[in-house]
Amino acid sequence: MVEHTGSLRTLAVLLAAGVLLPGCAQVKEKPALATIQEELRRAVEAPKPRPLPPAVAAALEPATKVELPRTAPIPLEPRFTLAVNNAPAQQVFLGIASGSRYSMLLHPEVAGSITVSLKDVTVPEAMSAIRELYGYDYHVEGDRILVQPIVAQTRFYSIPYPSSVRQGRSELRVISGSIADSGSSGTSGSAAGAASQLDSSRIVTSVNSDFWGELTRAVGLLIGCSSSAGAPAAVGAGAATAASSASTCPAGRSIVASPSTSMLAVRALPSEQRQVGEYLKAARLQADRQVMIEAKIIEVTLNEGAQTGINWAAFRQGRHVLSKGAATDGLAVPFDSAATATNMSALLASGLPSTSGVGTASGGIFNLALQARNFNALLNFLESQGNVQVLSSPRIAALNNQQAVLKVGTDEFFVTGITSNTSTSGSTTTSSPTLTVQPFFSGIALDVTPQIDDADNIILHVHPSVSVVASSNKDVDLGTLGTYRLPLAASTISETDSIVRLKDGEIAAIGGLMKRQSVDSGSGVPGLGDVPGLGSLFKNTNATRLKHELVILLKPTIIRQQSDWNAGAREAEARLSGGR
Image 1 (cartoon, helix red, strand yellow):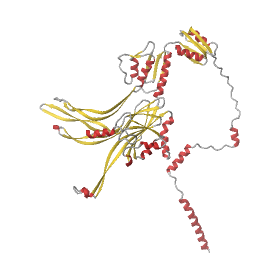
Image 2: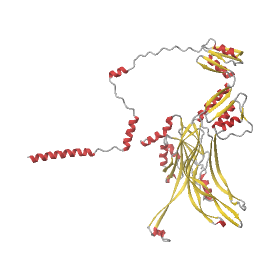
Image 3: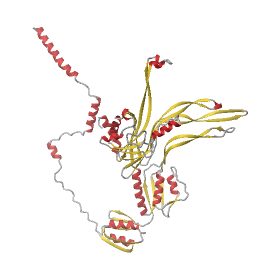
């Protein structure tokens, strides 16, 4: 009987263990993404305070009836009619202040006569009208009005802007050939052949930003200064000082700029000082505006149904707005330095814009203005056209009318020229070649210059380029100098130079940059496929032709407040959470 009781106890313990063990086996750790999202949700949500006891809440409640302090009513400005004809200015100002709450203080040099007829005006309105007509400057300090004479005054303006002078240059060209010019040789000189390039298409954009020089010249024109005839243009860090010294100002007027201290000193009449102040306010407002430019350089390997190019018309099926237009400037085709004139003509022909509609352009360059919330909608659309590979996602900020350049890649040096040097020493003549090398950039470069108008429209001069440089060894026969095997550059470049007009937050798509690629793949019997003559019987070779289209997406955003800087970070957080 005792043994039976022990068996029952043992069975009960085993059953209890069998119930607890499955329960312990079901306890698992939460996934890392779920834990991160839960912590982010707790951080974003405001903590709810514990409710207060009713007695404490009643004691903290404000009184239902609050008596505001009594303030004296502001008296209305009395209105009057002022009609004078050739009256002394001092008497007119004193008469305006008589019977009012204002005290009139006149500078001893206030002189001249005034003729006005003002009806139903207040004292500030009458003083403002006389200042606009006759130029008498005044200041209001409480109930006192201080009137200044019409003489030159000196005022200092603070202009926080860098003192540097920036010069930028953007160039795109298609070289159609070259013409060789034979040179002359001497006893100790050199014999060389120079080549002048022939450009079939070339676009050069120059940007010269001399803020302080332009500001000094503009303010000088407002106060009546004129540039001296034949004075040289001011260039460099001292452009502002040179511009002020090279101008001729009327007596009593001058302007001095100090870019190192961000100060501008102007001596001019009160009416001219008001114009200078208004101009500087508008100039600073425009110069301080900033644009954040987000770009995505994408290569799309087109599928079988999109061999003629990306069908942008299909994007209209979504809830997006699309407008099309040919690129204002630019022509970009894949260029190989080893290409002949025949295939270069074919490349140029394929690079010309097509007259057909969007989606059927064959290698033509075009711009599209897309109104989408973010890049995700465009990326999803491009995935329906083929395999999408994002080459680069640069993000760069630029001030208004200031050029910004972003460059990611490497520079490699290749031989671009050979010069034969001949030297004579006694009866011995020695000839040796001299190689000329130049750097070739391989990578991604983006050149952007934004301009913002008063309606928040953004005009972008954009010059993106994607270049791949490979080494190609060539045998060069130099005659008596022998034959040299030199590394030459074989570059493939896809670039465009265009000017687009966008709204704030609108996405521009630049497409039509297409190239072809042939991929050879094969299989065969190991060993037998490499036998000369009979190897073709034991292997299979396939040639696959692929088409790639380069698409550049640009999204400019005007920076108005600090939160605009974090817009990209918020979009990244939304993508991490699975949002669109």
